[in-house]
Structure formats: structure tokens, C-alpha cells
Image (cartoon, rainbow, N blue to C red; front, side, top):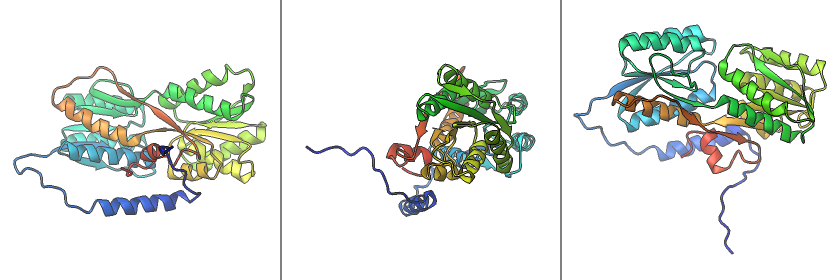
Length: 332
């Protein structure tokens, strides 16, 4: 009998080496010239404002948006941010994009205030806003693409409980930002964990956007309680927790479940320090954002967001072809 091969488990190689090979293959297959645009077609512009502190997820969103813009014959104006920039800088560059003029503007808002202020001003200017990774459709927000963060939190909570066999002490390492998405993740996780009799939820900790601050928060957390599992709500929290667990040489015993697909997270997943990642498809977010913008400009109207699914990635399935397309958006 001939069995159909649906996945391939690659040998343990550093993630950076794996990505280097993929990029080289992508370069070799992209050298053919593209057909010229019809001379009579006129390119319109869509602005994409970079997310704040989004790391590789932001790159995936940009790649997806670029692919859709090319397909729909729009020019994508990508507005980058510095690593130190926060919501104030994101709002500033977004408003500058409105002043320069654009057909539509895509933004993964750093806060509700950014989305609200931008939406009001964009509405006055007659420019549609498309919200990425945010389900709120405030004034001026004509379409939205997001995940259900509460459901993603429940998914992460269940994964942590399963890793612990339904028994143990867990803690949540959260951000010190008042981010509604992260709050929803935490609420979803607690819904699951609190209903499992063998799981005890210890007092958690909060940290800012710097990895060292999250490392210190994780250190204090593990000094205070005998923790068996950590649920980290964002990238920096996960890296800080992983750093402290590795320093204590307790990787494997202390289970870490988190969100994101940052390159360093993937390496820690492969090394067995992080155990599960709840991942969204950033490429699809960017692609659908541009697609929705084009449709809005053509007269379509939307009254609810597009909700994307999340996937659970671990060291065993991270190299499956379907998952490679989520983790490494340049994989065709």
C-alpha cells in the first residue's frame, strides 16, 4: 500500500539556518520579470502603518499586504516605526499619512485611543480605515480583521492544562499595558484553568515592553511560588519567562505556553524551553486588510469584523508544510 505523505519532520537545525535556506529558494524562484501594468491603469495608494513592537508578526502583515496590493494593482505605502516608538508615535505617523493623502489606511492600533482618534479624523477626510488585529469598528473604521482573543486565551489555557496533565500551579505573565486584546486573552485562559480542579492559579505578574523587565518579573514570580506552568500573554513576556526558566535549568519541567511567532520564540520552541505557541496568520491579516480596503473603496460595506482562526504550534508540528506557511509567510 502506498501511503500519502502529509508532513515531514525535519532534523533539529537552528531556525535561522532554516529560514536562510527558504529565503535563498524564494530568491531563486522570484527572478522572472513581472508583466508590465497596463499603461492606462492608474495605481492608487493604500497606507499600512506598522504595528507597535510586533516583531516578525509585523513583517508577515506587511508581506501579506504587499501581495494583495500587487494583485489588486494598488501601491502600498508602508510606514515603519522605530523599536522604541509607542502609541503616540503610531498615531502621529497615521495622521501624517492622512495629511499626505491616501485611498485608505490600514492600522494595527496600539490602543483604543489610536483607533478612535484616527477613525474620527479619517472619517472627516473621507478616507476609510481598516483595523488589523482589532475587532472594534469605531467611527471611520470601515472593516476589521482580527482573531477572537478570548477564544485564543481559552485555547492557550487548555494547552497549558494538558501539558500539566490537569494538575499543577500556574501563573499568568501579562503586560502592564491596558490592552483589551491581552485582557481578553487572560479572561479566556482563566475561564478554562479555573474549571479544572487540579489546577491552581497563583498570583501573576506584569511587565513592560522590554525583555529584561519581563525577565525580572518572571524571576520574582518563580522566587515567590513553586510554579509548574506559565502562560505568557505576549512576545516580550514569553521571552522574559523563557530566559529565567533556562537560567534556572528548569526547561522541560516548567511548561510555557504563549502567543506569537517571533523568530526567537520559534528557536526557544525548538529547544524545548517554550512548549506551545498560539499563532495567528499575519500574512492573511495583511492580505485581507488590503482586500477589504479595495472592496470598501468599490462600495462594499461591512458591519462586523472578519475573524481569523489561530493554530497551536509545537516542536513536533512546526515544520509541517501548512504550519510553515503560517510561521514563515514567504513560503509558497
